[in-house]
Length: 188
Image (cartoon, rainbow, N blue to C red; front, side):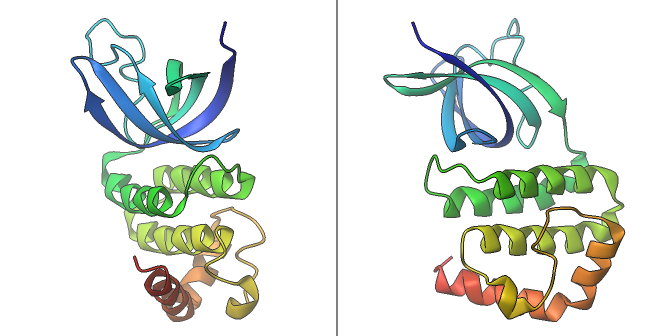
């Protein structure tokens, strides 16, 4: 018998597999980045069909089998609004490209969850600042950007309050330069 694990996760993307299955790229709170297959999720009768949408924050039940992870249950906690999907998709794609595997990072999960919440909460004009700060925090978490080099306290937490967004806007050129340098060094 396999052990079932409950964890919060963010669905970074998915693709179809077989007749009714789907494979999900999840960044989980307990296991880091995982690929999980979900059987028959594309059928009309599937209860997980609407919970496991791309870019959703979910509570997912996972089982580790011989062929990898399987999603056996899911409940949606929050869906991102349509005008913020493109912004969050770019952050999610960066995480998927840079994170190698199942390495747990509470700071990275909190950054993604707080980015998700900020994009749902804030006006569209602030989405650029949220994305820049989220990308900088992702790169900081993975060791591509040094907090000391930027000389800011934006990396001591993962919150996206108006004060942090204003500080990010005031340091925009420095953040953009550091992010672009880090991405060029990573050959992305």
